[in-house]
Length: 248
Image (cartoon, rainbow, N blue to C red):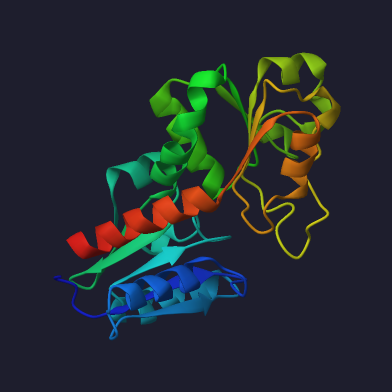
């Protein structure tokens, strides 16, 4: 292992219920890496993010990035790998020779987790949301040759929720929620799609993993749709991040 120290972490805004700290702490214990630590860095705004990247980050071996900084962190990094550059979002950073290099392992986690379901689902997708996670999903679909449309509250960024009708829902059988709607503690919320037009032909995938299942997935299941939450994707992207940190 060539990493210059053994400190890792997660950067985001609200991290109390985050997956990564527990996951990596358990991993370090299983691998008997008693000197390794993983910390949450809750940053309130872009100023704190900039200061973190200039100072604290340089003393780490690597860190993960979550809401709402996957896109916003890019100007404060020294370099991006090709996938992160093409996606326009970063969820993993390596610290190498005092330089911060951004990667995106979300798309690999998403791709590996959804591939087993695709042979049975005619491939055309609606991506709910237009944030950093949505970009990784779109990039995955692009590499797989799957047509997709974004759905957003902003009409400039794609379809709006209010124009989703029976015809659109019948044509787009993959529906991916990349928004935080329905995430704990707001577990009764869900994206505003016409659930009555879902069927057993649909696959609903929610990147939210807490709760499992979300209201979005519960409503899909009632209509007979296949459902999948984001836990497997999170585990896969975390493993890819660990691989990247160990190659640095």
